[in-house]
Image 1 (cartoon, helix red, strand yellow):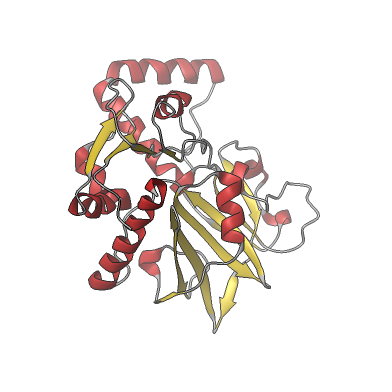
Image 2 (tube, one colour):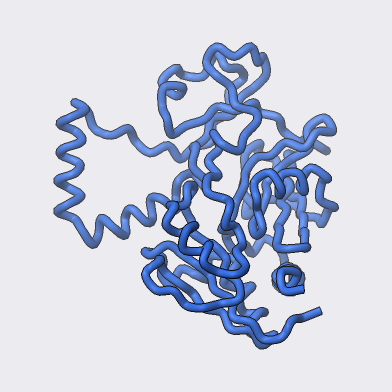
Length: 289
């Protein structure tokens, strides 16, 4: 049942812009909320409080600054108001250390969500506005440390065992090493993506001949029932809106990623995609029941 007219606020980072909203699914879901007669207000930063019936915390950083969560807590209904940190080092249960006894393959990846791309985008925005301050800060950091900053880690690397992982990767605090537990079937690697909003769960399984891949690289896509573990993860991480990437290895659900600011994708045909988004959008109404 659709509720009477409500005002829905979406809270973004202060350096986010309207031009970037189409890159996120929430921007497309807002279209359906507006079609249903609701008002959607985008808030950039925490300086201005606009009354609303519900607010979605949509700060695209792996660690949400406390000021955003404190700001959102002033609203009667808050989505993702208790989810602050989605770094791999926090959400993964398959981390491997340099002296670990794990004998199987491992994968090395950035600790930050989406390879740290959101953080780089916001940093670049700040650097462009404050170039002199940034240059001075870099000079000071280099002088104090005696070296340039380590290059940002953006890759996904698979190794046959812990023993062949370069030791320098274990020394970095922006990198994690995990057990590599693929889901394989018919000579393809599979990944499951389950989108969550309120009482809605939309789960898709995609496949690729490559062991590490994104949705745009998939060769097939099918709707599947979400694994029961999805609900356990949702409660554990307090995810009201977002997406879990996971796979099923030897019958066990393996969590790969938690995403609270899901990007918009076009890996399925337009009509099914729109129907899927419409169904997901209506999950918001469970908070107004």
